[in-house]
Image 1: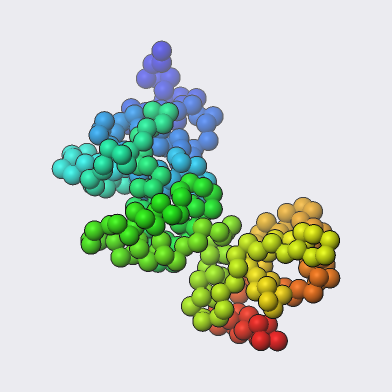
Image 2: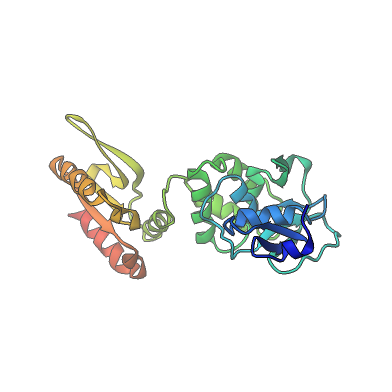
Length: 268
């Protein structure tokens, strides 16, 4: 259908050796994954962050990130740059095929991801996967605690224990971990506040007995119209007798000061 000269034209983009895509298609991790699917061994499956992306986890990987592939032990496949290959034994029950793309199942994907990196990175990631319903937190926890002793098993259990799946952003998870490690009373995440006239607002964290709320002020608060909505919401909370602590990304660079602020508000 196409000659080699036509493939070399600006109408086509070379993705990998022997694999081309329409040049009008945006270069995304999904496009790169579909290109790798055409050349990887039949026994290989997508894993890690690539599998999470295929399950619907948005924003975790981009076109600059390598496509992650899992192959059986002893496999001989050495792709060029852009692909990260890992050998692992996979139970057939851990492999799912959708739209012609074989990937690790949801629980296995979450389990593999929390067995690498640091505890905090793992908790942030697992919270994201659970809150977006890519994985079920209880199933990942059960799988983590059933892992035999080995590389990453202790890390996976620690991450699964600390995750709660309620945070709506990575920074909310980091704030929750900071509060816990500072020895402060544990707040209620995503707490719904009600008044005499019914529902008032849902806050990121709350200490209901003290009527104290903590909100992470992310970039989405700068969206058009959001400022006015935030102020109306804040006014409703204040009218109901609540106090609100606002936390920004800058506060996380000086965590000791943030802990002092929260402690002072709790004891006021």
